[in-house]
Structures are given as structure tokens and as C-alpha cells.
Length: 96
Image (cartoon, one colour):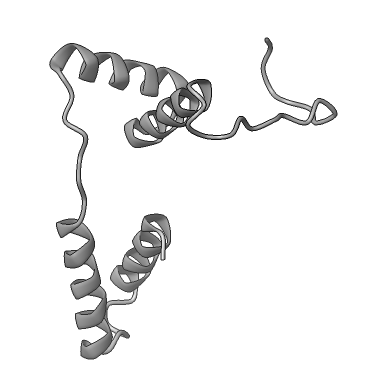
């Protein structure tokens, strides 16, 4: 189960709190606690943190998503991951 799926499940439970059973609520809360315990943030130097946050805001994506993109592209550029090829027939938004 992804974090987004689980977050949606938590929101759904919150909206229907009167209808959810105590046992189901306990299961959801235990899963939430486990996920929170297993979340490892990426500590960054203040200057790097500021740059990442600014770029993420400019791109309209989250900090975590930007870090994933940068890391994947670095791994591809340094031959640690195979390079993904973009289908040239597919239309893309934006400009090069």
C-alpha cells in the first residue's frame, strides 16, 4: 500500500468516523503509527534545503518528489540505472 493510498484511506475513515468499527479504526491507526515510525527524512544543509524547497515550489511538486527526480536522474547520468527513453511521438507539455 502506498502512502497516498493509505492517506486516502485515513481521510475516508475520518469522514465516516461514526460508521467505522472500533476494530477497523484500531487497524488503521496502528498502520499509521507504523508508517510514521518508518519515515526517514533526508537531512540537508540549510542552503541546500532552501534551494530544494524553492525549486519544488517553482515546479509545483513536493520536496520528496523533487528529491526522487534528482536522485533518479543522477543515477541514470552516472550509469547506476538504465536510462529511460522518451517516446518522441508522445506530445509533451512545455518547451525544450
